[in-house]
Amino acid sequence: MNTTITSRLQALRNQMKANGIYATIIPQLDPHQSEYLAAHWQARRFLSGFTGSAGDLVVTLDKALLWTDSRYFIQAAQQLDGSEIILMKDGLAETPSIDKWLGTNVPDSQYVGIDGMLFSHASYQKLSQSLAFYNVELVTNFDPIDTIWTDRPPLPQDKIFIHDIKYAGQSASDKIKAIIAQLKAKNVDSMLISALDEIAWTLNIRGTDVPCNPVATSFLFVSPKGSTLFIDPAKINDEIIAYLQETGVTTAPYSSILNFLRALPTQKVLVDENRTAQRICSSLGANLHFGTSPIPMLKGCKNNIQIEGTRSAMERDGAALVKALIEIEKRIADGVPTTEITIADILKKHRQAQPLFFDLSFDTIAGYAANGAIVHYSANEESNATLQPSGLLLIDSGAQYFDGTTDITRTIALGTPTPQEKSDFTLVMKGHIALGTAIFPEGTRGAQLDALARQFLWQHGLSYLHGTGHGVGHFLNVHEGPQNIRLNENPTPLTPGMITSNEPGVYREGVHGIRCENLVLTVPAFSTEFGRFLKFETLTLFPFDRNLFELSMMTPEEIRWVNEYHATVYARLAPLLSTEEQEWLRERTLPL
Image (cartoon, rainbow, N blue to C red; front, side, top):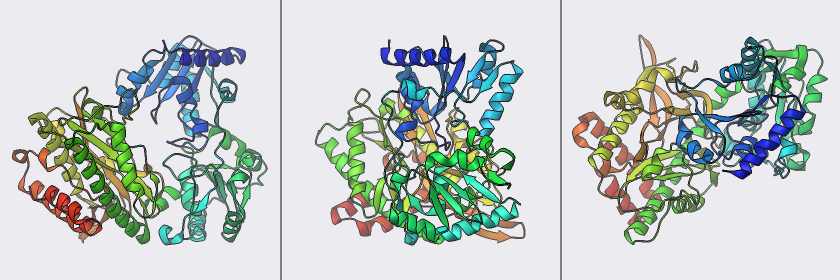
């Protein structure tokens, strides 16, 4: 029995009883609806012990359950073991939604309590309406965490800094002008921005508040009459204040946002109901105007300077990976004990040595053998496997450089691969190639291309439950919208300038995991009488493991794609490498 988690849940239940609450939801969110959180907002992790980046905890007076998606099924089962918390596998047909489960398990006329700063208006509305159907009331002022979490980390205090225009490619003033022009087109007067990456992009500022995501905790109010950044005064200095004033932005304390919104004169304030907290929305009163934020599309379509910067970052990142893999292979060949954590340390060491390195873009996933089947695996002292000269090693890693963000996954055979390993790998690569070489008409959405990456796996009764592609920021969050490539429908078309991952995979629990990921840039292909067509330019530069290809399963066109890609990898990376490193790369990019 996990007594630490048990005592924390009991403390929460004591608060629930004192406030007349029968059930509560602790989401993995902050007031900005972020995917990745500062330590201050990791309440769900504190209460459950589950460390995944997605998942919501539901606690009633006598039960505790945690919903998470397929990326974390194995991890959550391991981390919840020994606690009373029941794992609910979200997305499976037999798993009810949180609102349906609450509706059928909370007695009539009882209360479900939530913190309205941790739920977007859209999610609040959906939950409130669903519970009302069951005669259960939702209240939004239940915030017991400070009382329970006595040593809770404070809000981040680190200083923010300016992201130089030589990397950003566009000034903050010009970005604000573009946003205001779109607000006028939408017939609204102003806009409240809660999403941290949108604020960082708009103002060309960056921070260290969230590990691996260079953002700063803040809100931004944008108006033609002047804009205001709500941020802790400890995070700014005279240089930042002067820089912001030059762009027409004043500053106010982070904690003053609600009072500011309540005091606004009559106007239409645009908010994105999916990315703005319920309490923020309610503070706007009659000024509230729901609509789609123009920023994700402006941010998602990279400008030419950002694109060139990303290409350069990919070269340096690829060179770092070459140096890292050489060291890893030598350790294994020499019999030096090498663990999954060792792999992560080696990768970071070589990336840190590259010019313009800032941080990792996410915690490295190095999964050996069965651990590779855990999609978002994170090695710890208990799980940390020692590599052997056999089996598969899955490495998903990336870095933040001032001129670009990288994210790459490679699956590597540490010995002679088995027929199943080669077959699984080749099926994944066939889908990777099919998606990477797709040509599609302008207006095509990611959901319309997703099956290209899955088709060969499906033909063999195999599949994967995660998305095939996510948008990637520029020296910003490694996961960003508005586009993605997945089975679920997303109305955003793939548009020139967007950087998206291409990462099909297959996972055999207890055996191995395989994923092959490059980042791709949407670019024009050609135009015909039927309109403009688009394609992908592959940005990532590092070879795939030649030993894992089963050539009998591949077409001549697929083999040619691999050979041409490897030739490009060698040509682009060789100038950054020593003679010995060039020879290592040459051998790994020989034609199949």
